[in-house]
Length: 109
Image 1 (cartoon, rainbow, N blue to C red):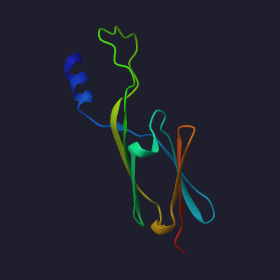
Image 2: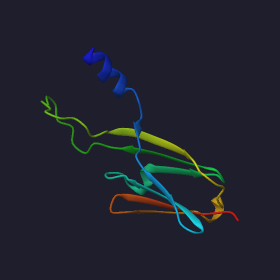
Image 3: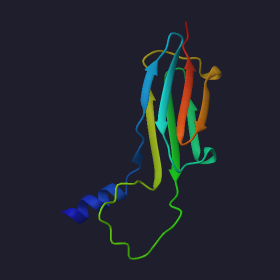
Image 4: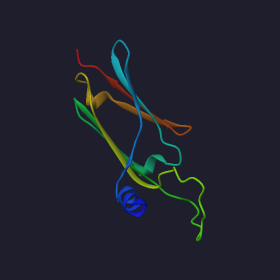
């Protein structure tokens, strides 16, 4: 059973955790994306959704590791968010600083 679960997890994309909140005139999405450079991210924004896809590459691969814990996800990850209200996708701005992705989405009025 353990091997089945491990194989199931290994075949899936990692799930990106994030915060989504609003200010007066904008919706903000924040996500900790440590170990990923901007060139390894693909962000798609429409007026009502945001999709974030990327790939976290493991820098060192050691053979014969004997893990006590293995919680880090290496490989592809993705997340799509349905926004609570429409935004102006053309005016959206994304920044990646110190491993934190911030997407600012101006609300449509």
